[in-house]
Amino acid sequence: MTASVLLQLLVSGLSVGSIYAIVALALVIPFKASGILNFGQGEIVTVGAYTALVLVGFGMSYWLVLPLTVVIGLLAGIVIERGFIRPIMAAPEFTLVIATFAVGLILKSAIRLYWQDNPFALETPLNADPIHFAGVVLNPLYLWVVLCTLLLVVFLAYFFKYNRLGKSMRAVSQSHDAARLMGIGVERVLMISWGMSAAIGALAGILLAPIVGINPEMGHLVLKALVAAVIGGFTSLPGAFFGGIALGLVETYSGAFFGSTMKNIIPFVLLVVFLLIRPYGLFGKPPVVRI
Amino acid sequence: MSGQSGRAALWWLTGLALIVAPFALGTYHAYLVNLALINIILAIGLNLLTGNSGQISLCHSSFMAIGAYGFTLLNNLYHWPVPFAVVAAVLLASIGGYAVGYPARRLSGIYLALATLAFLALTQVVIEEFPDLTGGIRGLKIEAMNWFGLPIDHKYLVYFLLLGCTALGVYAAKQIMDNRLGRAFDAIRTSPQGAQALGIPVAEIKLTAFVISAAYAGLAGALLSMVVGFIDPVEFGVSAAIRYITFIVIGGMGSVAGSIAGAVALTGLPEALRPVKEYSDLVYAALLLLSLLFMPNGLVGLASALRRKP
Image (cartoon, rainbow over all chains, first blue to last red; front, top):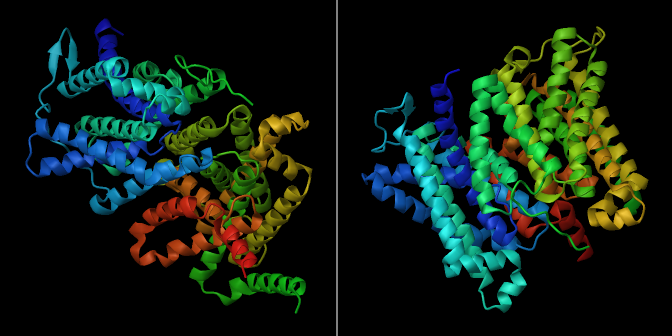
């Protein structure tokens, strides 16, 4: 196996990992703020992809569709938080897991009712010929995904470190009560965190659409994002990013060396191993429970 | 007629109706009764784990798949007599339950949900990646069954096996819930720390709950493959797992009556929705969500609330 093949695998691993990382970030942000894991996040990705499809169908340019889709995702997230999540915020964990699953299922079956199972392609200005560079084939679509992920990570890092709203989100994630005493509108912050998460999910959808094609089962990807989030630690944003990249690389290399069966099995084996040995992930903090 | 004997009469009537059902009903309605019984078995098992012991499981469709594929392969490849193949399928599913329950002893909440989801994804991958054995995504047909050469229509044999299994399942679940084990389930649902302090071996009890529950699901799976005659991995995916959870949420958590009510109501529902079949997933999910929001104790809770308020 030559160096150029290894390099090629590195490039595709990073691209796949970037998508996992984006969706994992979308999972971790509302989890940190509200303590609720959105099992319907995958369907937000699907909704993002179909939104882009509809907007492109209106004849808009891709560069206009991209920000519009993200904004629509933001609004959808806010609606979901206010409509379904807030009424059951204090419910037992079982209810929350199943309710978020149900919201996802409703979105997916609604999409399937309208568009059926037909796959759709999304034409973008980036569906260009691959670039050959140092013996490695670079697909512009994949490069764009990696670039967007990096921009997103830089934005989030800045947002949570310097922005007032970002800082109040961190405060809310530490303690709702203490944050409220400091004059932070906890409900507003929770709503915005769900909105941000859905906006990031929609971004993942529009990035993924030209690569895998648009179909109702796109949201299946959330399983991999969950694995990524567990590897990185559910309470850590950098963890979600590195978990996603690491999972993409592991998957790609194991697929190349051991075949597709291993490639499909390894993520879930990793998930179970991590849950057993380090349930708080590589970067997360071990939870301290007061009985 | 007093309430007690009225209830007994109701039981006898239901039993009698179930015994004459396969002879009185047409093929299609008999098939529905079969499905309802299978769903009852599954719901009872799931309810013991989720409703009584408080453990989330998103992989009951996988235990069902293990039972179904185990039975079908023993039947197709080795022509085992049906009762032996069913027992073997149940054992295989219990081993699956052990495999999930062992790591799950230390997990709870979303982490348990994730671990069970991973198991579901794993079984799906395994079924799809070994098409030579499992038929892959194209599915697997159940060949002629070995009933020791009994000269009775197999349709009736399957039905009465199913009926017997359901009765046994209901009885066993009642026994478990009325005994030491059932009280331990309730204790670890209410407070694992409190249960531990009372000397209840929490980890062991959780594992037991998983194994029992998986055995029920495996039985349901084996019986399903007999009744339907064909299995494929789509039948055992995430949406199926959510459908089974819908049974117990709508019926009522932690009660055998709830499992039965939910399973019967929701087996009838898709058939009622048959003209608008595409909507069935949507209706299921919407019912599940509405029930979680407005009817947290299910149909059984609703019924007892109505009875208390004359």
